[in-house]
Length: 311
Length: 97
Image (cartoon, rainbow over all chains, first blue to last red; front, side, top):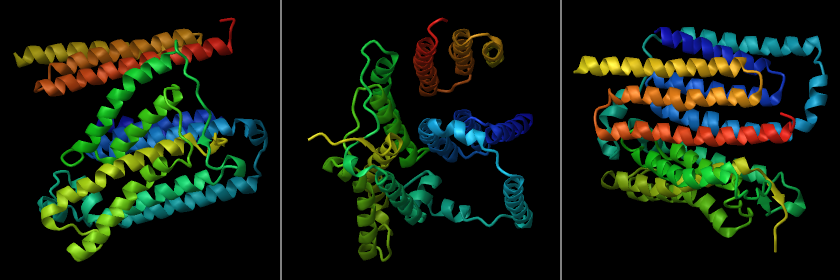
């Protein structure tokens, strides 16, 4: 109990510090710490699946994206910090925040004492899906449409980011080229860590059917390993016009759609799995999906194309 | 037997917590970046190592114990590499230090 109270105070403190930090970089560091503490809170709430996602995607990947953004914004930092918003601006921002907080508080107090839940039905029908982890069952079977839409949104975000590239760089390689430093610590650690990390990523994906884990968490680790290898200069990010890269990106969602439409014919509904093949079909979706998500996340961190395509 | 194991766990975890405490104090109080990094690695290497040793006495099964040791080794590797990179960045940005 004491630990939980300290944790909550710490989360609130880090959140307040992050919001009040004037320096963009410092605020991003605060955000990453905030995400890790939040992951700890999810562990205390006995939701390790959410904790893994929060630590991997919420804190790690989003933190990486924000770090990249803060580096790009460094040039504008002095002009931005020189501006002092007017009192009316402060008042309206504070007013909107108070309104949202008050509404949330009212809604929270109005909630029925016994929260409406489908957990019992999920647990009772778990055997039908062939999975042992109810969270994965919800993501891949009961609410598979949500997962499918999330994956499509990720892909659209990537296309949207690519479209920020100037015309002459379209189809080129994202980000800078990191030359490998043969004596550096980074190539050394990348050579050691990347093989281990790939194994851990596959393991996290694989245990998703019986224990906390799954394709999003596993894919985040795989993406992180790709980013690490790129930063160490061991591999270079391929030009975004490469056909194999685009196939890799769309195979996951495409297989997901294909199985979904097959369900229409075989089981009578979009994304319905015939009972005998549920586990097999989920696996057929998950393997390419994990690879597609990993590639999408890594390319999101890499940024829009910045180097012209070499002929 | 289990009492002795519990005693060892408490001893090792407390020792680990001490190193985390000392590392944090060093991080906050030391004057320059390189000595702050030095303090920080003590928390990662010794502190986490002692906590892991303490928890090993409570593990059931070899696999869980090996996973814990794996976590420690990976943290060691990551911490050592990150410290190297930070120290190098400090050096190149301020050559007088």
